[in-house]
Each structure stands twice: as C-alpha cells, then as structure tokens.
Amino acid sequence: MNRRNHVTLLAGGMLLLMLLFLLNISLGSVAIGPVQILKGIFFSDWEKVSFEQIVINYRLPKAFVAVIAGLGLSLSGLQMQTFFRNPLAGPYVLGISAGAGFGVAILILAGALLGFGMGAIHPWSLALAGTLGAGLILSLVSVVAWRVKDSMTLLIVGIMFGAAVSSIISVLSYFSGAETLKLFTIWSMGSLGSLDWLQVAVLGASVFLGILPVLFSIRSFNALLLGESYAKSMGVNTKKLRWWMIGSTGLMAGAITAFCGPIAFVGIAVPHLARMIWKSADHRVLIPASGLVGAALLLICDSIAQLPGLAESLPINAVTSLIGAPIVIGLVLRRNFSKEF
Image (cartoon, one colour):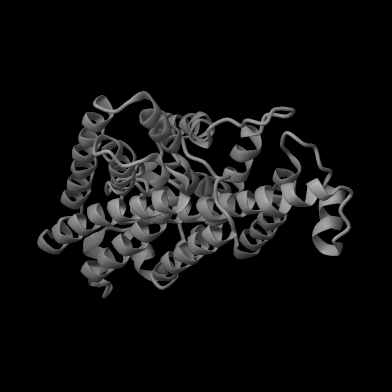
C-alpha cells in the first residue's frame, strides 16, 4: 500500500472516530439525538436542562476517557510487541496492571482489615493507590532492566512480578469482607465513566507525556523489526530505548489502569488490527494508525456496554474481552506472526 492510501485511510479513520465519538455521547439510559447534542455543545441550545447535565458532566468526559485510554493502551502494546518481538505482548506484560491492582487492593482490602473506614475510598484515592502500586512494580522492573541485557529475561521477570503481586491480592481477597471484596471486584472490571473533568485532564496529560518518547523512537522501532543486533549495527542505543520504552509504557498503562481499572485486550489486539488494515509494519504509519484504531475500538466497546433504557451498563473489561479475544485467537490461527515480526 502506497503513502497516498495510508493517508487516505488515516483521514477516513479520523472521520469514523468523530462519528463514533458522537454516537457514544448519544447512547445511554436517556436517548439524546446527535443533532441536539451538537446544538447544545456549540450553541448552548439544550432542549432540557437535564440533557446538559448528562452530556457535559458524564457522557462527554467518558467519551474523552475512551479515546485517551484506547490511544494510550494501543501505543503501549505496540511498543511492547516491537521491542520484545512478541506478537502477544501487551501493555501489562511488565506487571503494571497487577501493580496498580495491588495498590488498590492495599487501599480497599488491607485498609478494611486494618480498620480504615470506607470514607477513605474515593476516585482520587483509588487513582493514587493504583499509581503508587504501578510505580512500585515499574521501579522493580527498572532495577532488573539495569542489571540484565536480554530483553526476553526482562519480559519473563515482569510477568513473574505480576504473578507474585496477584497472589498477594488473592490472599487479601480471601480474608476480606463481602462489601470491600465487591468494591474491589467492581474496580477490577474497569470503568470509563467515573472520572470528572480534572481527572480526565490528569489522565490526558499523563498519556500525552507517555506518547512523546514513542514519537522520538520511530526510527529505532523500525530498526528493531529486523532484530536487536541489526538495530545496534544501525546505531540504535537499545539500552536507552529500553528505558524510554519502560517509562513510556509505565506512565501510560499505569495512569490508565489507576484511573479506569484494568482494560483487557485493547493493547494486544489493536496493533495487529492496524497492521492488517494499513498493510504496513512501518512505525511512521503504525503509530497514528494504532492510536486511531485503539480509540475507535474502545468507543465501540463502550457504546456496546450501554444498555438502552437501563441506568446500568456492562463492565468495559467484559466487552473488550469479548471483542478482543476472538481477534487475538483469529490472529493466532492465521499463523502469520512471522511476517509481522
């Protein structure tokens, strides 16, 4: 596929993303037409005062969170797959998701066991606990990255850190009461709709900072497609790239997990979808393409999660798993990973 076709697909993807964004805001327990939403947002002409409250204070932040989270997880997954040359690597292979879950488990489960009241649990404290937990695991992985040279060893150690932390969470869950266990389970299902505008801004800033190293590493990622030895022969400082990659992925995936809970399969499936649609392994194409597909996919999943006529919605993690798992299984059955890595 030539450059013109790539640009055309990207432009079409942007248009589709805007339509999905508008559709996502329209769906929910209260039906609000797209025209009414556009009139309200751009001309402050709301049919009902309640519509303004619903759109501005709930649906619009949720849609922005879907775009930000989809973008961040997709680019994190793309980095992991390229650096480790592993088609099933995702943003959570370094144990970041488990670390965030560990922080939240300490706040909710261990806090209850130590006698702390439920009043200490609110969105900001959950986000802070998740960030600290993800930061702890990221620090341990960074120490290992400084001591080992083999990227595969780093991958295995990250997975083992995640497994160890998950076992601690299981022990805490076993000794927890029904109320706190339910609260932690709900967090682990993921949610895009629990953030206010300030939290959306903090999440967006974190993902933006995490994207910057990705943009400055495009040539290095392209060189890695032919192996780490070839990349070194082309002048790529793979040790420095490893640090950039760990920091970037940790910041994006850690912030998203801290604010939204773990969101499965987006980071694994989306880079492969982008490769299939754009028919390219060039990261100059894949980075914007993966970002677009990730944002669009999470908007679609969130739209599916909205149950018309009901106040409740499905857990976003359940929907992403139902959609993402068949995609990954299909990719495995195609057995064409060797062409992509």
